[in-house]
Length: 160
Image (cartoon, rainbow, N blue to C red; front, side, top):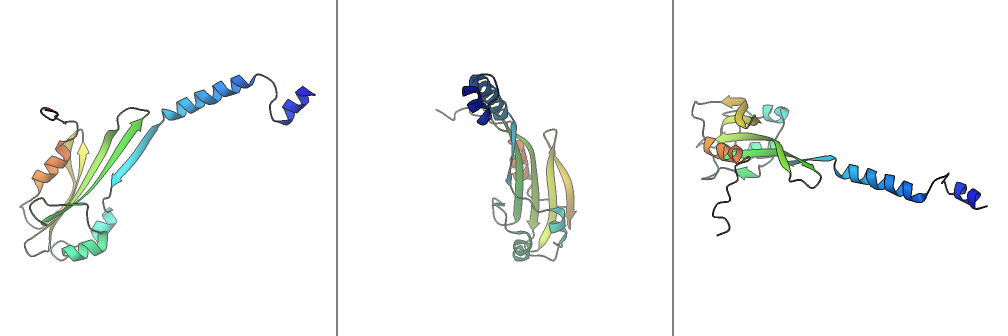
């Protein structure tokens, strides 16, 4: 009778501890699976194609693709859209695997001067696409700061 009752519950043969050990191992292995997270937002190439250099203003850019999370440090001369991809494995510290920045620079008249897309390739800033009306490219200092902090955290004097 006891054997028939065990079959009715879905257990065929073998101790229950074996099922528990196998379940625990599967749970442990699933905890070590990599987790990928995306942070931030950048407009797509199709969205950026709707913007015209020398024609669109801050208001029309905001209405077309939305306002960014970051803008120029000294004023509102540039808007920066930033997206990062982070990978976490188990309890290890998250590692940034990709970062992309779209920079839209405005002239003194409030019209778009240039639209640039930057990415990372082997730790170096690489322009992916660029639409410029003038040869003067502003905002490089901010982009260099955004991309330059990858893996270069200096904690000297932080805890003094």
